[in-house]
Image (cartoon, rainbow, N blue to C red):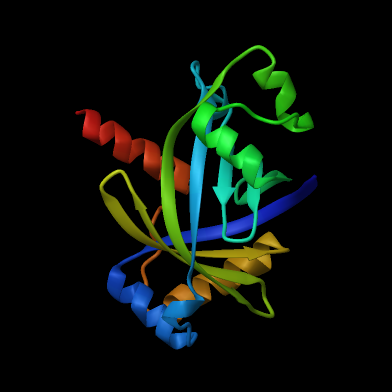
Length: 191
Protein backbone atom coordinates (compact mmCIF):
# COMPACT_ATOMS: atom_id res chain seq x y z
CA UNK A 1 0.00 0.00 0.00
CA UNK A 2 1.18 3.48 -0.84
CA UNK A 3 0.21 6.50 1.24
CA UNK A 4 1.13 10.06 0.36
CA UNK A 5 0.02 13.65 0.60
CA UNK A 6 -1.17 15.04 -2.69
CA UNK A 7 -0.91 18.81 -3.25
CA UNK A 8 -2.96 19.64 -6.30
CA UNK A 9 -4.22 22.63 -8.26
CA UNK A 10 -6.75 22.28 -11.05
CA UNK A 11 -8.61 24.39 -13.57
CA UNK A 12 -11.21 23.59 -16.18
CA UNK A 13 -10.25 24.49 -19.74
CA UNK A 14 -12.10 25.12 -22.95
CA UNK A 15 -11.28 22.75 -25.81
CA UNK A 16 -9.27 25.56 -27.46
CA UNK A 17 -7.27 26.23 -24.27
CA UNK A 18 -6.63 22.50 -23.88
CA UNK A 19 -5.29 22.31 -27.44
CA UNK A 20 -3.16 25.42 -26.92
CA UNK A 21 -1.56 24.03 -23.73
CA UNK A 22 -1.00 20.63 -25.38
CA UNK A 23 0.72 22.34 -28.31
CA UNK A 24 2.80 24.58 -26.05
CA UNK A 25 4.18 21.56 -24.17
CA UNK A 26 4.49 19.61 -27.43
CA UNK A 27 2.22 16.81 -26.20
CA UNK A 28 1.34 14.47 -29.06
CA UNK A 29 -2.02 12.64 -29.32
CA UNK A 30 -0.34 9.27 -28.71
CA UNK A 31 0.97 10.55 -25.36
CA UNK A 32 -2.58 10.60 -23.96
CA UNK A 33 -3.40 7.38 -22.10
CA UNK A 34 -6.94 6.24 -21.39
CA UNK A 35 -8.01 5.45 -17.86
CA UNK A 36 -11.38 4.58 -16.36
CA UNK A 37 -12.33 5.68 -12.85
CA UNK A 38 -15.17 3.92 -11.01
CA UNK A 39 -16.44 5.77 -7.93
CA UNK A 40 -17.93 4.00 -4.92
CA UNK A 41 -19.87 5.03 -1.84
CA UNK A 42 -22.23 3.61 0.77
CA UNK A 43 -26.01 4.03 0.60
CA UNK A 44 -25.79 6.78 3.24
CA UNK A 45 -22.97 8.49 1.27
CA UNK A 46 -20.28 8.02 3.92
CA UNK A 47 -17.45 9.20 1.65
CA UNK A 48 -19.31 12.19 0.24
CA UNK A 49 -20.45 13.35 3.67
CA UNK A 50 -16.86 13.19 4.93
CA UNK A 51 -15.47 14.95 1.80
CA UNK A 52 -13.62 11.76 0.87
CA UNK A 53 -13.44 9.87 -2.40
CA UNK A 54 -13.02 6.16 -3.07
CA UNK A 55 -12.31 4.91 -6.57
CA UNK A 56 -11.05 2.08 -8.69
CA UNK A 57 -8.78 3.35 -11.46
CA UNK A 58 -8.20 1.03 -14.40
CA UNK A 59 -5.11 1.73 -16.50
CA UNK A 60 -3.46 -0.27 -19.26
CA UNK A 61 -0.79 -1.66 -16.96
CA UNK A 62 -2.38 -1.66 -13.48
CA UNK A 63 -5.51 -1.27 -11.36
CA UNK A 64 -5.54 1.03 -8.32
CA UNK A 65 -7.98 1.36 -5.42
CA UNK A 66 -7.56 4.80 -3.88
CA UNK A 67 -9.07 6.51 -0.87
CA UNK A 68 -8.63 10.30 -0.79
CA UNK A 69 -9.10 12.13 2.50
CA UNK A 70 -8.90 15.93 2.81
CA UNK A 71 -6.25 17.47 5.04
CA UNK A 72 -6.61 21.14 4.10
CA UNK A 73 -7.24 23.22 0.98
CA UNK A 74 -5.30 21.78 -1.99
CA UNK A 75 -3.93 18.93 0.17
CA UNK A 76 -5.33 15.39 0.24
CA UNK A 77 -4.05 12.24 1.90
CA UNK A 78 -4.10 9.54 -0.75
CA UNK A 79 -3.91 5.83 0.09
CA UNK A 80 -3.56 3.48 -2.86
CA UNK A 81 -3.34 -0.26 -3.20
CA UNK A 82 -2.85 -2.21 -6.43
CA UNK A 83 -5.36 -4.95 -7.30
CA UNK A 84 -5.09 -7.77 -9.79
CA UNK A 85 -7.15 -7.97 -12.98
CA UNK A 86 -9.29 -10.70 -11.38
CA UNK A 87 -9.93 -8.51 -8.31
CA UNK A 88 -10.70 -5.57 -10.61
CA UNK A 89 -13.30 -7.62 -12.50
CA UNK A 90 -15.01 -8.74 -9.28
CA UNK A 91 -15.07 -5.15 -8.01
CA UNK A 92 -16.63 -3.87 -11.24
CA UNK A 93 -19.13 -6.72 -11.62
CA UNK A 94 -20.14 -7.35 -8.00
CA UNK A 95 -18.72 -4.49 -5.88
CA UNK A 96 -16.83 -7.06 -3.80
CA UNK A 97 -13.50 -5.71 -2.57
CA UNK A 98 -10.35 -7.50 -1.45
CA UNK A 99 -9.15 -7.03 2.12
CA UNK A 100 -7.84 -3.45 2.28
CA UNK A 101 -6.79 -2.05 5.67
CA UNK A 102 -7.88 1.55 5.03
CA UNK A 103 -11.36 0.58 3.87
CA UNK A 104 -12.21 -2.59 5.83
CA UNK A 105 -13.77 -0.78 8.77
CA UNK A 106 -16.29 0.93 6.47
CA UNK A 107 -17.22 -2.04 4.32
CA UNK A 108 -17.41 -4.45 7.24
CA UNK A 109 -20.78 -2.94 8.14
CA UNK A 110 -21.88 -1.28 4.88
CA UNK A 111 -22.07 -2.26 1.25
CA UNK A 112 -20.33 -0.13 -1.35
CA UNK A 113 -21.88 0.49 -4.75
CA UNK A 114 -20.56 2.13 -7.88
CA UNK A 115 -22.47 5.35 -8.44
CA UNK A 116 -20.69 6.44 -11.63
CA UNK A 117 -17.62 6.31 -13.79
CA UNK A 118 -15.45 8.65 -15.82
CA UNK A 119 -13.27 7.86 -18.81
CA UNK A 120 -10.26 10.17 -19.05
CA UNK A 121 -7.62 10.57 -21.71
CA UNK A 122 -4.64 11.88 -19.76
CA UNK A 123 -1.22 13.21 -20.64
CA UNK A 124 1.35 13.55 -17.87
CA UNK A 125 4.37 15.82 -18.03
CA UNK A 126 7.14 15.94 -15.43
CA UNK A 127 8.41 19.48 -14.90
CA UNK A 128 11.04 20.87 -12.56
CA UNK A 129 8.25 22.45 -10.48
CA UNK A 130 6.01 19.36 -10.30
CA UNK A 131 3.82 17.17 -12.50
CA UNK A 132 1.35 18.59 -15.01
CA UNK A 133 -1.67 16.61 -16.18
CA UNK A 134 -3.94 17.40 -19.10
CA UNK A 135 -7.26 15.55 -18.93
CA UNK A 136 -10.02 15.13 -21.47
CA UNK A 137 -12.89 13.43 -19.62
CA UNK A 138 -16.21 11.91 -20.64
CA UNK A 139 -19.00 11.14 -18.17
CA UNK A 140 -22.78 11.25 -17.93
CA UNK A 141 -23.27 13.06 -21.29
CA UNK A 142 -20.55 15.59 -20.36
CA UNK A 143 -17.20 16.22 -22.01
CA UNK A 144 -14.70 18.42 -20.20
CA UNK A 145 -11.07 19.50 -20.32
CA UNK A 146 -8.89 20.14 -17.32
CA UNK A 147 -5.36 21.00 -16.31
CA UNK A 148 -4.01 19.68 -13.01
CA UNK A 149 -0.71 20.41 -11.34
CA UNK A 150 0.75 18.32 -8.49
CA UNK A 151 3.67 19.60 -6.47
CA UNK A 152 5.48 19.31 -3.15
CA UNK A 153 4.84 22.83 -1.79
CA UNK A 154 1.48 24.65 -1.69
CA UNK A 155 2.85 28.18 -1.95
CA UNK A 156 5.37 27.52 -4.72
CA UNK A 157 2.93 25.28 -6.58
CA UNK A 158 0.20 27.90 -6.51
CA UNK A 159 2.60 30.58 -7.82
CA UNK A 160 3.70 28.33 -10.68
CA UNK A 161 0.15 27.28 -11.54
CA UNK A 162 -1.27 30.81 -11.54
CA UNK A 163 1.67 32.04 -13.63
CA UNK A 164 1.09 29.22 -16.14
CA UNK A 165 -2.60 30.09 -16.48
CA UNK A 166 -1.80 33.79 -16.81
CA UNK A 167 0.89 33.17 -19.43
CA UNK A 168 -1.62 31.30 -21.58
CA UNK A 169 -4.44 33.78 -20.92
CA UNK A 170 -6.58 31.17 -19.19
CA UNK A 171 -8.93 32.55 -16.54
CA UNK A 172 -8.89 30.95 -13.10
CA UNK A 173 -12.10 28.95 -12.79
CA UNK A 174 -13.55 27.42 -9.67
CA UNK A 175 -13.02 23.74 -10.45
CA UNK A 176 -14.56 20.88 -8.52
CA UNK A 177 -12.85 17.51 -8.31
CA UNK A 178 -13.88 15.02 -11.00
CA UNK A 179 -16.02 13.05 -8.56
CA UNK A 180 -18.03 16.19 -7.66
CA UNK A 181 -18.47 17.09 -11.33
CA UNK A 182 -19.71 13.57 -12.02
CA UNK A 183 -22.27 13.78 -9.20
CA UNK A 184 -23.50 17.19 -10.41
CA UNK A 185 -23.86 15.90 -13.97
CA UNK A 186 -25.76 12.82 -12.80
CA UNK A 187 -28.05 14.95 -10.61
CA UNK A 188 -28.80 17.30 -13.51
CA UNK A 189 -29.94 14.31 -15.60
CA UNK A 190 -32.38 13.32 -12.85
CA UNK A 191 -34.02 16.73 -13.11
